[in-house]
Amino acid sequence: MFAQPGDAAGVEPDSSEGIRRMLTEIILDASTNAPRSCQRRIGPSEVGDPCPRRLAYKLLDWPTVNDGGDPWPSIVGTATHDWLANALERHNRESGQKRFLVEERVEVDDGTVSGYKLGGSCDAYDTATHTVIDHKVVGDSVMRKYKTEGVREQYRIQANLYGLGFERRGLTPQTVALAFYPRGGMLGGLWVWTDVYERQVALDALKRLGTIRDALIALDPEARPQMWEHLPATASSACRFCPWWKPGSTDLAVGCAGNLNPTQAATAA
Image (cartoon, rainbow, N blue to C red):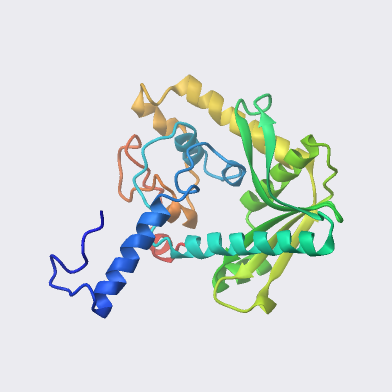
């Protein structure tokens, strides 16, 4: 049951501010309860995260302390993914051929490599070119950064994990592609990064995940919270969006300070 905006602050429900608050509350509630927000098991998009401690928190389904801030960029991204999925499905129907496998779930690991059953839904697989396609919706500064400095290794790993999943299904992926759509620009700003599919990239990432799993078993931070410090953190601008980031925290069982300096924390993107 939503509280009526303005009941406590004297704002009329039918005023512009009242309507703004009402819409914001509904959007935040829907975002918090969206399937992706409620995902508890680790997925291909997270396996390549450079921070072992963040992966450890995720593997143990540790209580989160950071909501990640304003959800609107994520909402825009999710809506764009849905629209693109419909567009590719329409192409399949209009052409009379199922060229694209859209939002197909693949099994990346049955547990023999990482110790976990790992799977996920890939945005698209082009059967004509044997290409894994993953959509990313980003802001201008991030787009410029990726074009000049290269894409995040985490994304490269994600794409190759999906490739491994399709290979396990009997397909022959040859290329992995990341399609970057401008969040606030025009379609002409679409930029696509491609690379050769490399099975070993995926296998190495799964083996690393298995190593973190082994460390968790040996250290047992659930029973011995002081052992969290032996799971290293890789601090970066991405700490701001980590569900376990707690600035100034001295208790890793509660949250990780991330070791960000004030400038990094303010400019994280």
